[in-house]
Image 1 (cartoon, helix red, strand yellow):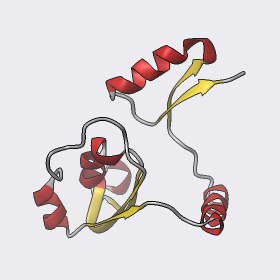
Image 2 (cartoon, rainbow, N blue to C red; image 1 turned 120 degrees about the vertical axis):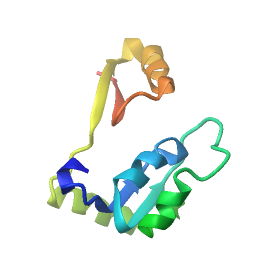
Image 3 (cartoon, rainbow, N blue to C red; image 1 turned 120 degrees about the horizontal axis):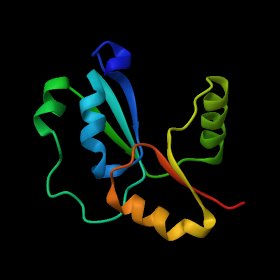
Image 4 (spheres, rainbow, N blue to C red; image 1 turned 90 degrees about the vertical axis):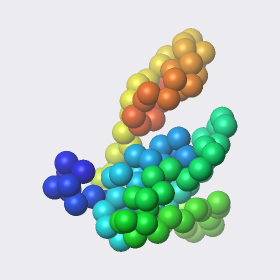
Length: 118
């Protein structure tokens, strides 16, 4: 919200599923689109989060189950062309892989958790 002057994002790519969907809804602008790619593990929420905000902001939520190879190639080219970098929360050495999974299970991270295989 800070980066948009509290206007919110017009398009939000949601990769965490229902666990992080409330954050995506809060970050969305009026008339925004949220595209859900993938699902996180664990128990699904009993109800759709932020239901009133979805209606109040007139947000469209769409799930993407799979795409073609050509779509993935276009996506990767768009990321490269626009210099988009993933948010990395923490990197664990391979020897600490169990700690990485425990950290992931806490759900307090923002961004990706990596295990370095080198």
